Image (tube, rainbow, N blue to C red; front, top):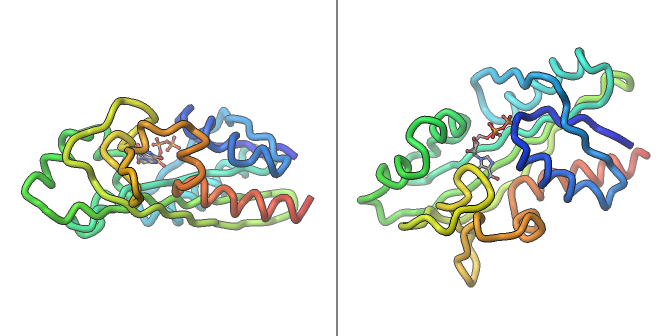
Length: 186
Ligand code: ITT
């Protein structure tokens, strides 16, 4: 089956295609606007998916993700896109420059809306890790260079292949749940 992924982010499309391929789901980038109201990520993704599905009249999927930094009480969380495009990775590192608590997590909410069969579902995924003192090598997108998942080798997301990132990431986890759900319905 095919689903339309509503996003302006080409890196997300590559990651999501890789996750959903084994489930027999073809992902196409939708030429639709992702309406983003302010709220928790699962509210943003569901509302954006409902609006896009009304326009597309076929199944759509919307991912809304954010970086939650413990020392900043969860900030930037749902405001991650704005924070990334304003102060960026360097700004976030300087907000934490005097903090020994580096714990953080990426969270992803994936909302699937099928307007024909009147189905609405949201799937969540999370990866825990820490904000690095120094960025890793460029790669991936967004906050990837400054975030390392907890694990033995401390590699930042930016230094992983799409497959390695998907195996452990917030997005990989959330989209595998969607893949299992869609595979069971086919
Ligand atoms: P769309 O809204 O068009 O889907 P976006 O890149 O703005 O694309 P989000 O709103 O879901 O995506 O993500 C908010 C920000 O969080 C995004 O700008 C990135 O900076 C960051 N982010 C989300 N997922 C990420 C990931 O897997 N790796 C690094 N940064 C990520």
